[in-house]
Length: 204
Ligand SMILES: [Zn+2]
Image 1 (cartoon, rainbow, N blue to C red):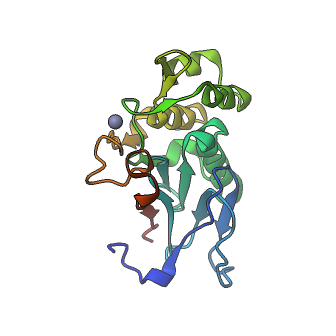
Image 2: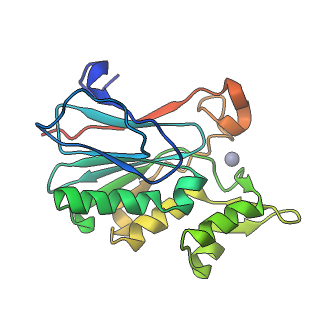
């Protein structure tokens, strides 16, 4: 891999489709016991952090001023629970990051073209606090009670809502299912699907 580190310096988490944040603080790192969380943040340039995805969105964050980084696993459950928002807040609270100093990359994920979901997904977003205007931007109607979710846009809008500048958020725009021959998609390949790693390291 091209992170400039050996594999044991890549910290991963046990992903639960939630919003819990694991913190790897510089100098306080004992053995990493892969905690249950969906976001990981660090100020340690000697390690890389990553999330594993196949249709869920990897949201990578970098603080240009402080050099700290974050990685969030945000599929529909995570996005409904505002995982991206939690990731930014954790960087603010732990490392004093300002949202206006952050740059974000949202990697390939299930696109609005293929993101057909049931009404329970819409309910989860409503329960998670999404307002009607956001719902109308993130969902479009499908057949009967089915809907199509634009997961990348939901994550993007949440980052803007928490204070990031729109020009600092980069979306890959690639749908994992549409491009399942080159990317890993659970929707396309089910149990045979591999996982992609969204990883980031702060170069001091
Ligand atoms: Zn697609």
